[in-house]
Image 1: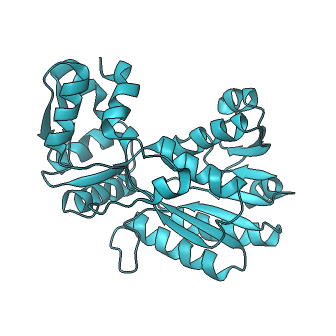
Image 2 (image 1 turned 30 degrees about the vertical axis):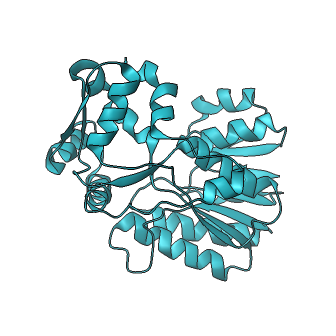
Image 3 (image 1 turned 90 degrees about the vertical axis):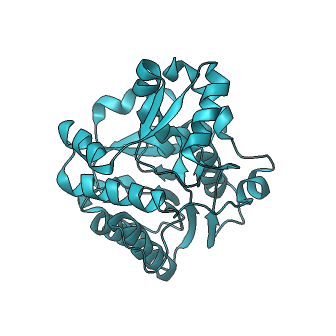
Length: 284
């Protein structure tokens, strides 16, 4: 049995779809029972619980051979992941596929990347097989700019003027699914990226091409972005963590492209242009 954590989030939701399409049985751990319906329609066995509830985690891990582990970027992230890995080992799990990030290297300065580094080390020392899936900035995070694109023909985001590499969530999910369902990915670390090294002005030009109207990039001051997060109720720890991540990216932390997706999946990664085309309804 495979256990998916974060099954209603970006990567978990896409992985659930791929497992269902492949006819692979899986259990989905979610916090909100109101979100169980779509997963049950995919044929998933749904377990209700959160990372702070050790008893719920033990129950969800019963009979599980493989796990996809992803946790929310919250102040308790490192603690949650440390406990989960311990419980997974106690439950007899053989293989953990872990969503980390390409910036998560020894000496990382932001709290999210520091948590990733600690969990990667714990997994390597756990005695369980592991696979680290380490993408870059998700294409799908650009959906947060959809309102500005629709109303003002502008991508408003605090990502600076330098280049960055993005990764499409659908590619990430395909790599996760491969690691969960096929042999040969144990104890491997995969840095995965899309094909494009672009500035945000170049991203805006891609939007212009696909949507057929001029889209410009507005480099948003990070404090303005922070205030938007605060206004929608994001707690102060997460505001700082998110802003720290975006500041690192704007300073050039994500500029290395890899060919890992081509090697693993036998096809090119999804480009930003394809992403905009596939999600164009959100921007029109």
